[in-house]
Length: 282
Image (cartoon, rainbow, N blue to C red; front, side, top):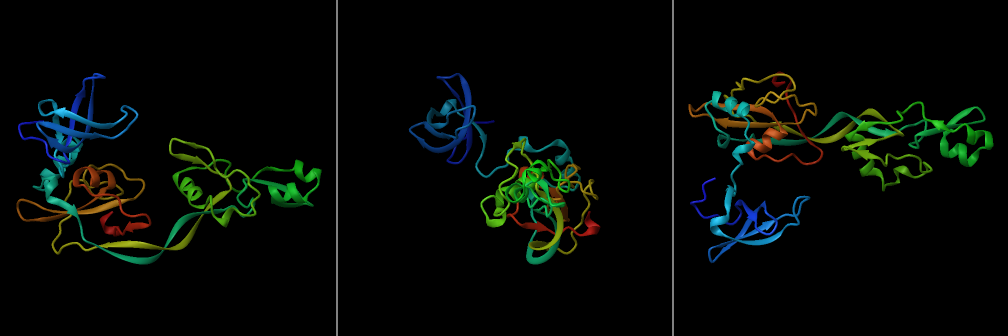
């Protein structure tokens, strides 16, 4: 990138570490006497720290407040060009947040094993494993086995989130320990003792306030796909964005959270918030 314009505080820059021989990237914190003070965050590739580098050895990668153009896919740019817009023309549409009662899939303790993941038999009755172990005889202890109602392993991010939220609460009291999903691999949890149910919960739902005359004319539309890049969004998490073209037409799109962040600088919504997407817009 052109470095004729001196870097300013907040710019993302790169430079060669003369001691180790590789390039490092950081943010400018100050410019003093022809040298740039750069803060580099610690990572697995670098110990990080504060570096003072000569101005001519610094390369500006991204100006403060600008979106890195290398994050823009050609497919997404072509979509915007078709509507006579550029990324800077777009932003998050106005949203009115309402607290609503919605029905969603939630994780609850298995009623058969009480969350322990194992069951036993005491006097012909199926009970959680801790009851068979503490209150039964030797035969009852031998009968302890994997629960037949909840899966032995549950590969799901929701399961991991449930465990993290409830591992220190009273919900586990009385379960006698058991297997509470301690193993994690590739952002997934191996969960047992939980089953899913659909229950009504209170949730913040955002109702988009589209401007009058907004056109949803992206070349990618319909279904659970991003209107910008056509990628399938299994999570169903979309951001409503709006932009005004060079011809004065106001456009609207439903885009995935990745495109919302990379193209338009929009961050994810708060925990527990969801944006209502009308059926006709899917």
